[in-house]
Image (cartoon, rainbow, N blue to C red; front, side, top):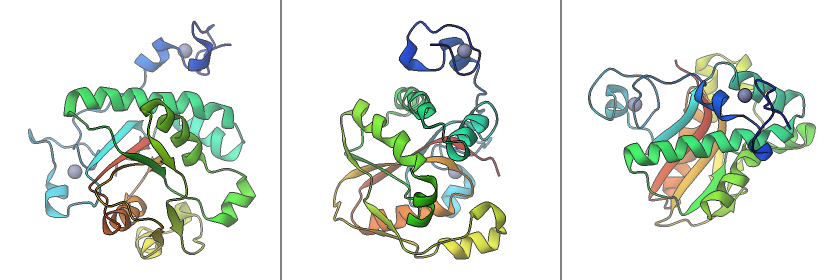
Length: 223
Ligand SMILES: [Zn+2]
Ligand SMILES: [Zn+2]
């Protein structure tokens, strides 16, 4: 087995990506603990988040939405390369442990993922966020609730919409199916772009009683 990125033989084949390539991934400069976007203040939380607080509490991303992860996510979503998800999930858990050391993150009580609408699920055959979340729940030894959230209606692909349309689109789109009172939740997605979708989800999770929400993603688009 060889490294997905540099093609060198792997010492531990199940890792998928070699330690040198992990080390070479693009790094974030200073980012806000809550939204994951760059900021220059010496505080943990940026102005934007203090002004309009998101419903989630912490956001952990492996890199910006740039290569090599951008390309790998594309392969997973559009070329059925689902075998890549385990290596990508491993990058997420490494980033999480790193942040845990820096920020003192708590281990969440349960893990869930952003659901795909069933029409897209049928056409794609899998939800990439679910494939990323499952091994993470196992490694953290926590319950995995892939169907905690229900997506209410079909939405056209977000990337073809304007920002305004996207924002209108996500309103009341998700419902939480369970009482999760006093539980801390980790919500997993592949890419966080505007944050509107996850914010709508997190609002529902908090309504259903979630005490704390960590959002974990592979890539965070810098706006
Ligand atoms: Zn490599
Ligand atoms: Zn922020």
